[in-house]
Image 1: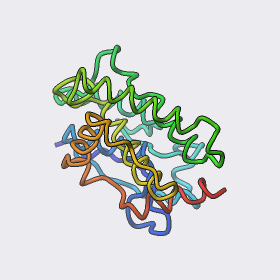
Image 2 (image 1 turned 180 degrees about the vertical axis):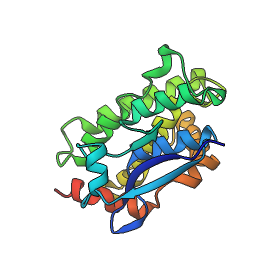
Image 3 (image 1 turned 90 degrees about the vertical axis):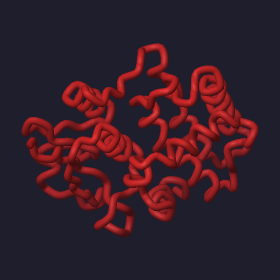
Image 4 (image 1 turned 120 degrees about the vertical axis):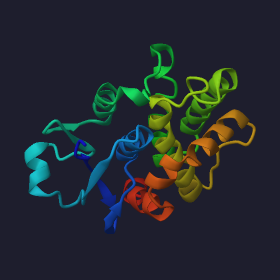
Length: 214
């Protein structure tokens, strides 16, 4: 039996012994869980990175994953390699849906950090959420129909961060009339892979606090 895949992820802010709030690390863990690939995690305190991490990945960014004795950074690259290496649980999606929701994270970030209610950032996020809702209404329950794919596993952590942080910092919620999107989010968050790998709400808030209040 092959040894478990090693993956380095962000540790929780203020709690270095438990997994933290990085949505890109979460995406990699979700992929490993959905593919049923055994793995071992290394928790990285991103304020005090260990020397071994800087040696294998000089930028010190997480996630990084060790496959065939080589450490590989970047969640996009990692997910692609995992799909090639473990094809029996394929998560690939056709090119026409692979960019669905691709602007979600950047529009969410802009609105979260915005101090000006008239800068258009809320409207831009709403338009992105509505487009996602329309896609799901026409093609759901997942982005690529009946079967979960890498696109969903990329969006799930981002939607989780969006839901927690916008409620906490702005008292803002995804509109109820985006029913397909809200159902999609609920079904993603209820998956066993998600329950097992998500950061606790308080660590998501702790991780974002310095960025929002800067």
